[in-house]
Length: 164
Image (tube, rainbow, N blue to C red):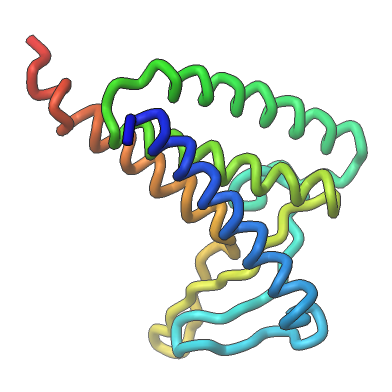
């Protein structure tokens, strides 16, 4: 399999897994009705609608702000697709596919619901205080994994080792 095909496959698998998990949690599992569902002592399922960007920054539910976010996301996805098409390493291409699939998955949410569906909450209790991570979804996991893959490929990959 060529690197480009692997990247496209990574994008498609990410997109399908992300959307399937969200549809199941919203419609099959009915997470909105159930509220917080404890899965483990450090992981809960909880429904959160993110109208901002990553980590809930720039929260704004106006239609103009949502359209601006979608426009920025569309331009970013096009740039990432061009980068992926020009990439020569399998790791970088798959990493870009993960980012593209995650970005499209969250973009579909924004179009369908006006916000991104987040549902995973990691937390820890220390000394009677609970510390929560941001609520996230599978698209977010894929984006972070893709960025990590790009960083690894940039600094430690084969082309990086051959650089003067």
